[in-house]
Image (cartoon, rainbow, N blue to C red):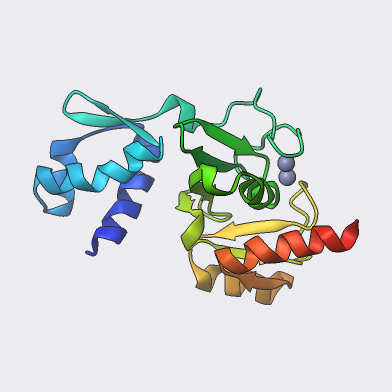
Length: 186
Ligand SMILES: [Zn+2]
Ligand SMILES: [Zn+2]
């Protein structure tokens, strides 16, 4: 298993179980605890997990709370659509959906160290850089327009588009396109 796959599996596991022992992860993936510690570093840095004695826990701050408002449009946050921005000062901002996430990220520029969003199907977290973005689909997700949906796997995004219309974009493309579309509207 590639380190990047292991990292994604750990992401999923910690979100499901909330607490995991390093020893269990080491056993599960058949790698040393040292390797697991190395794997966990980005997850700690992005604020998804905190280290506990001999293990990790899902960080409380990594869970969008209902009283959070989108830092871009001030709508309430839908947990399933939220887009998380991890800033240089270790602060975490939430936006209501990827639409606002991308626009906010553009506004903050270099301040953003990392951005995280949810897979539309599986509700696992994905690094925004690796996400496939779907726009102009006919499904209404009930948040901001133009809508931006996020998928971990490009093939899921492609299938979704086949069924419900729209187009698939990489992070860099979506980052530009959503801004262009908003500009066009004003
Ligand atoms: Zn918003
Ligand atoms: Zn929104």
